[in-house]
Image 1 (tube, rainbow, N blue to C red):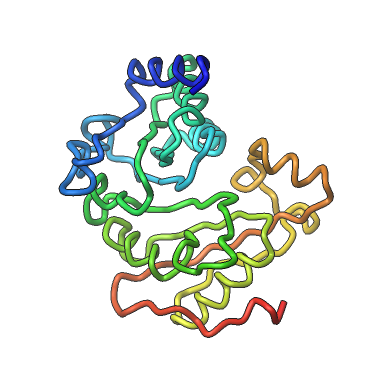
Image 2: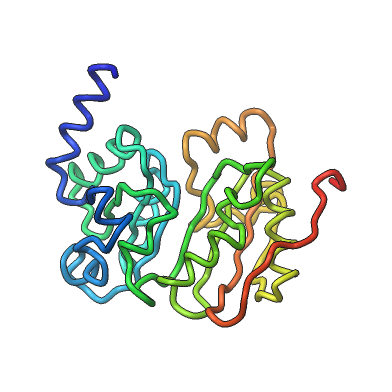
Amino acid sequence: MGKDKLKRFEENKSFECLHQPEFSDVFNGDCNMKGNWNTMQFKNNNPVVLELGCGRGEYTVELARRFPYKNFIGVDIKGARMWRGAKTVTEESIPNAAFLRCRIEFAQSAFDCDEVSEIWITFPDPQMKKSSKRLTSSYFLERYRKFLRDEGVVHLKTDSRFLHLYTLELIKHNKLELIEANDDIYGTGRADALLSVKTRYESEFLSQGMKITYLSFKLRKAGKLTEPEWNPEDL
């Protein structure tokens, strides 16, 4: 392990905005922040919004800057990357941004029922070979329902046409309410204050001429979610 990475891991321990529960806490039980993010971290009653797979935390930080009436939490397992976002939040004293180092599969151990109002999924690995690993699959949506309020909104922003179309098919298959679908947010002029935040990867994709897609839908609590019969070879 490189010295820079070790230094970042050590500095992460000093950030009040970064929570790193022990694996045993999230795997076998609940961490102390569950149900307490508004009271213990943000000291307000504003809606809590998650960014799942936040990486360097660029989207979490910028959304917190642009929307001070909401609380944003970036979730990822890679602490060396998350260090950048946590350091920025600390240096700029951004009060409505925080981070959780945790596998997304175990996020329900860190958030209570109805504690989260919205979920952002930005540029995840499309996992073309195994649907259960996709962050918009029924496997993950079932987990999100444990802490997302009923009819809470899920946002997906991606460069992957595959993941965009798969998620649209899953929404249709499970009769979820689609709010919006756009297959080229910059080409259509749709990239407003909410969608124009650019991560490092997004800037790279755009420089290569790739289209950035966006969709949002409401996730209800009732009913079983199942995978669509969808063949990616039809693309």
